[in-house]
Length: 78
View 1: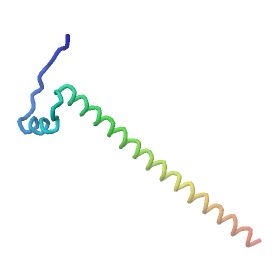
View 2 (view 1 turned 120 degrees about the vertical axis):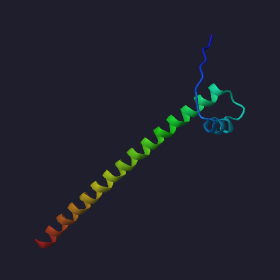
View 3 (view 1 turned 135 degrees about the vertical axis):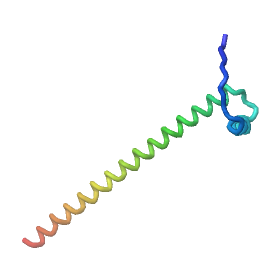
């Protein structure tokens, strides 16, 4: 047997939630809302990691390119 509880929220919040809920029952709606929130947080975290990774790759490419140029200059001088 399922157990139920009540959650006190302001009237404004409940009105917003009811508009979003549509014809779904509250348990399904709130579960989907939480799942979507968690999914979006994972997507944002992955994008942040990808951005950091891309920055590091760009730094390494720049460093490698500069090292190659220095090496070529030394050869030209000799």
